[in-house]
Image (cartoon, rainbow, N blue to C red; front, side):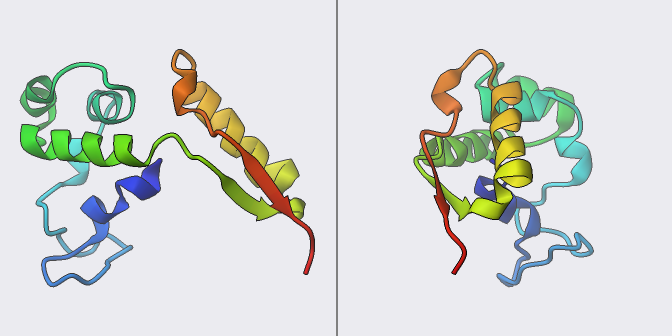
Length: 119
């Protein structure tokens, strides 16, 4: 889910990617705007309104709407492909996290997982 929104946090004004968060992103989003459940509930779970998010966090309503639209475009995951050596850790947590976040909305759960053998 995070990957659908990462560009909003890490892309700088000149188009570079700053994964350390040491430079402002081109959208003006600060960590404080994303703190707490309200922005994430709105973006990931369609709970509340963009205006309520803005009033609570300072995240502009139009940006919250844009982020939610981006997330909804890419979700649910149609197919996750990974190595068979990751079944016991990565893929298990992938399923647990989706079930925990969207416990009341199974439409956001991964649709399928494919495991490759060792090459």
